[in-house]
Every structure is written in structure tokens, then in C-alpha cells.
Image (cartoon, rainbow, N blue to C red):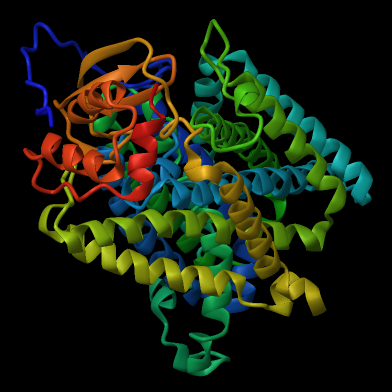
Length: 555
């Protein structure tokens, strides 16, 4: 048998360092932070404060505090993943790296559906708010038409380019920040009716007693987690478009939560302590600010959905991938993905209603939190196996504890969201709407996964790429070999096939040369060569049947 050795490292002068991206590098730390902050929309607290305070009293502020504490915990874990894998697609790519491509596809599909459904729900809600500015109550069709117009405008802005997208993000963030701070300060100075102690009042003193914790408190937590946790990962969704993503993305992800959380806590405290009619004269102006902030967030939600659609079609795991995977020549934007996301989102408002929109919010919220949960489970498994490697941004020794607590928190939040509450989602079968919607999303994801990975999935980007014109590169960030699926650390050398958008480690690349000379090699011979080629990597496992199939597929 011919000896196959891992390739030498070469010198930095001979092998260029390379970021594996094909989209433009256009977002700075500030503009990336604005994406997350704008989509987290602190001004949402004005839209839910009435119902929250009516349900749980001024003590509902504790639910806000808990929600943002959990969100910061989860965001910190996601930031570690983003630092290690600063790849476009966020939860989809992290799951693919940590668990595998099949799980990655299902998570990516759930994430995509989550944002498309949320786009429809928020557009319908904004449409109702606009009519409310004129004291009008539209029927479902009229509200749907206005929601369609809002989605059309969002689509046009996304197609116009990143400059306009960044401008919308900054404007939406500014509206939320300034609007919340000004109104909250006015309430605290001129309209405070209760002492600060009311925020920490014991449930035993209230109408519900300690049952407050299992009733009104959880009800409020549903509202907050469905709305406030949306967008925390947005900056990671465009990681390949951010400068110095290994450091910028985690910082933006965490600090956007810190700032948004502080603003919401301050504003919700002011609302809880203010006189009931304190905002009566400013309701329409607040509604206008909400419409503007939500419309800006709608633009960014479409960006998130279109990027996920593009990245999954680039990996050839969704139907019509050749069509959706194209980028525009100028700005390198996924134009077709943007348009299709807009079309699907524009249809949904016509089949919803004011009550059904709550079901859409619940379904979208549960799908999003599940998309957060799966890669964190993968991170937990990696830590247990001792294969976890820190990126430039890390939680250090607290990382393992944060992962476990995040898993517990996300499981609890998902169960709380999908719990069939008639008071929140409606009576009868409608109360089960989020569960039904989540099941439909998962089942469709499994069907698509079965299609994508038929015959072992050798036709997908990470399996069936062809060895045509390879460039030897040095990785500027961690990645994964498309054949053996081994994690490649920053600074590693590998072969990059730009036409197939596939990365191959040096040992696997040299194996393919050996196989070409021996087309009749048995699996046993191929396994022996595989182990010999990767002998310098102590963590490599013997090749599975699917790994051998991927290697044989290389031409």
C-alpha cells in the first residue's frame, strides 16, 4: 500500500490566509450591533405593558428581569459559538458543525420558518397599529393588504443594498432607544404613583397569592420571551459580512442584549410605577414610534430569513438550490432568496386574524428558541467529549455552567410558550396552535432532510463536491473538512474549491489522489489509508460508511 501522509504546513508566505466567504464584508461592530438592537425592539414594552400589568401587577417587572437575565445567559453561550464559527447562517452552521448536516438542516429550516412567520405576524400587527392611528378598525383583508405593502417596502429596501439596510437598522434602534428613555424618564419624574418597593412586592400580598408564580407570572413570561428574544442572534446571522467577525460578532451579540435589557428594565419599571392614565394623551405618538420601529425590524427580519435560505441552498440541501443560491454581481446579495421570502411572508397575513396572529407569534417564538437550543446541546456534547475548542471570545471556566443553565432555561421557555392557554391563544383547537405549528415545521424539516440526504447526500455541497480547481489556503477562522467532517482550527491549511464552495483537509485531499489511482479499492483498504493519512490527528475516528461514500464521490 502506498503511504499517504498529512501535507506539510508550508510557510505563511506561500499559503495565503483566507476567510471562506463569498458575500461582501460590509458591517462594522457598530452597524452589526444595531441589527440586533433594532430587532430586539425595546419599545415593544409599550405595546404589552397594559396587558402585562393588568395580568400580573407591578410585580411583573420581576418577569422582565428574569427574562433578560436568561437572555443574557443564552446570548453569552451563542457568542462563544459565534466566535468559534463566525459563519453566515448562525444556528444552522453551528448545529452542522457540532452535531451534523442533517440536524443542521432541520434547525436551519425551523429558523427560516420562524422568521418568515414572524415577519407575517409583525407586519399584520403594524398594519393594525397604522389603522389605529386614524381610529379605524379594518377587516382582515384590508389589514392584510397593508401588511403586504409593508413587506413589499421591506423587500425593496433589502434589494437596494446593505447601505440602506444599515441605515434602517440604525434608525429603528435610535427610535426604540430614544423613545423608551424619554417616555420612561417623564413617567418617573412626573407621573410616579408607587414606590420602588412595589416592583419587588411579595406574591403573598397580591390578589393571586403564591399562585401568581404559576399563573400570571408564566403568562407574562410567554409574552416577553416570544417578543424580546427575537433577534439576539441576528448579528451572527451575517457573520461573514462583518469585519473581524471572531471578535466583533460576540461583542455585538452580548452588548446588544445588555443595552436592550437595561432600556426595557428601566422603561418597564417606569410603566409599572406610573399612574394608570399617565400615557393617555401620548398613545398615538407612541403607536407611531412603535410602527416605525417595527417596520425597521421587519426589514431586518427579512434579511435574516433570506440569508438562511441562501446559506442552505448554497449547501444544496433545499430544493431549487441552483436558483436560490445565486448572488447579485454588484452588492453580492441573495436577491432571489430575498424576493421569495417576501412573497411567502406576504401571503400569510391574508390567512390570519387578530387572534390568530398570537398563534403565529407563539409558533415563531417556539421555533426560534428550539433553533437556539439544538446547537447549545451540541456544545454540551462537545464539552463532555473533551473536543470543545475556545474561540477568541470565551466565557472561560464558566462556559460549561452557562451551557447547562441555558439548556434548562430554553427547555422551560419553549414549554411555557407552547402550553395551550385559552386566555392567550384562543379557545378550542386554537389554543393548541403553537404546538401544531411547531410539529408541522419539524415534520416538513424531516421530509426535506430525507430528500436532501438521499443516497447519503453525496450531491450536497459538503458531500458531493468535485475536485476541479483547488487552492491551498490557511484558514482565518475555524471550519470543517467537507469529507471527514473534522474540525479545522484557525491557521490550519486546507484545500479550497471555490466553484463548489467546499473545503477539504490536506490528508483527505491526498487520499483522493490515492483513490483515483486505485478505483477498485475496497472499503477495508480505504479505511486503512484514511487512518494512516490522519495519524497526526489523535481525535480522528475510523471512517464511517457515509464518510467513505463522500470520499469516493470526489472526482
